[in-house]
Length: 377
Image 1 (tube, one colour):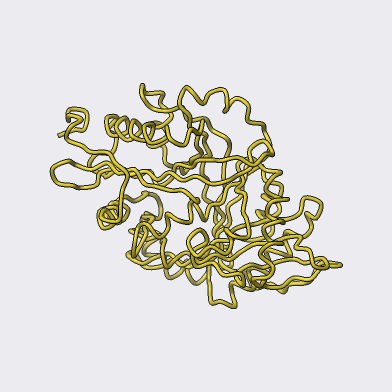
Image 2 (cartoon, rainbow, N blue to C red):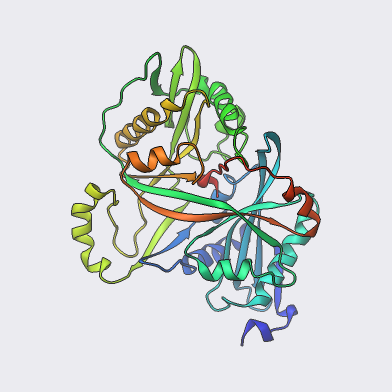
């Protein structure tokens, strides 16, 4: 039966709880993104472990069949402090929109899900949300930006590049007048201050406190020593963290398109020379960690590459083979990274999402470069 001919009472929309964990994890495993490499973004061993990293307030809307309880769609929403037009404010994010493959293309499913999202949005009174869609996901882009009655308005805000690369072997040097080292817990207030100085120059960049950085839920499995910092005297002038999220969030390789699968051993032999990470077998997780919580003082742009090289060395010391870094295409360091380190690139489109009551707020957004934290999406 098509979703268009189904009656609304056949489905139930509500905020998910721990009792929905197994169904949500199944939905993620079975909802994959086709391409040359078909992958599924999974959350094992518990769906909700990753949710706490998305914001200080978070929840997942679940749409399920009323009789069977089978999950057929979900979407996460989270809230955190961020910089908008240079001012600290509350910002919402819609993430993890998934539709069961049996109902993909159903306009009715999207209407039901977004009606529920609008209802649960009332309490927080935010005028708009952010979201990202993979640029190659043409079906999702067509459906969500179609202007169908009942759906919110999606406005494109530019491209986000996710650079995936094998950890390079390069010597690190201290910039003149500075020292590079791994952080300690005592550095967290200075790291937070550096992040705030940098992030307030961007649109939508998160506002981090020292308490956030030390939180075992907000920054799950991220320790102070996972930060690489550049010090000038006692002041942190640049920072980045190597955040290994594999214990609670994974990229599962489902299959390879021909001839990649048969050529995988050759790709793994020669790929590092071209910036191509080693490819796992189908059915295995792709091993990578995120370069996250990046900040470089605006007046010290030359610190960017030494910082990245030092963080790569720290990742190599931890036995990590691959890293990912997300930057908007108009980020001031996007071009520097793109030309300095061999990589493969995945592009997503950043959108603001609003209902009619948020139109005026969206119109006031200025054109400064966007910066979102891909590790928390």
